[in-house]
Structures are given as structure tokens and as C-alpha cells.
Image (cartoon, helix red, strand yellow):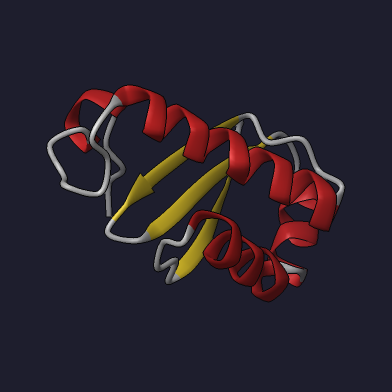
Length: 91
């Protein structure tokens, strides 16, 4: 499954303006930082799945370990239905 860029995501009705999308991405970064103590390189969103990219395997493992807490926090903070958090490693 491929992820889409900001321009393509704007076509969906979930986001009315680019500011909404960028704010959502910032909320994802904050939640992952507070729950898993990991800095996220990039964030993507498609079909209610949040994709995050990190720099190494230990960071990815930490997010995978805490994915339930991260998903619950994102649902509560953003009010969006988050089905899953997907993690990719750069490199």
C-alpha cells in the first residue's frame, strides 16, 4: 500500500485546509514523542492509517511496542478514526 503526498490527501474530505493536515501531522509527532520517546522523521496519512518513518530499528520497535497507546491517544486528541500506526525505517 502506497502513501500519498499532502497534495493528494487534500482531495479527501477529512481535511478542509492544508493547515488542518499539518496540525494533524504535528499532533502525531507529539504523541509518538511522548508515548514512545522517539523522534519521527516523516508522517503520512491514508485510509485512516498513520505512517511514520524513523531512522533505526530500535525506534521502530519502540513504536510497535506502544502502538495501542499511540493509536488511542491520536483518536482522543484528533477525533479521527485511526485504524493503525504503520512504521518504516529509513535506510
